Amino acid sequence: MTLFLRLAPTQVLARTLGRKETLTAFEQEKLDFWQRVADGYEKIFAERTNVVTLDAMQSTETLCEQALKRVIELQKI
Image (tube, rainbow, N blue to C red; front, side, top):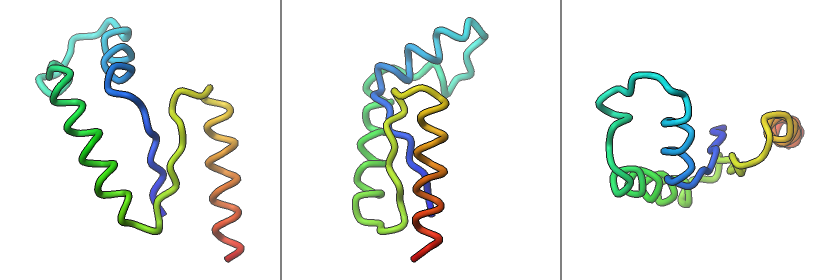
């Protein structure tokens, strides 16, 4: 099983810049790069049956609760 935490590229950039740390070369990529990355993951995961997609805009607590719930549900199958 794969947990896919979906987050808009604009939010990825905002969170990365908000850390106030020195950015790696990878992290310095522009928005269009991050959009292509997001689109690529969406395409890959759309064709897979073992992917659980979660909204990464939720609180950490909610995200963890939902992930745990899905893991437990899938183990019962």
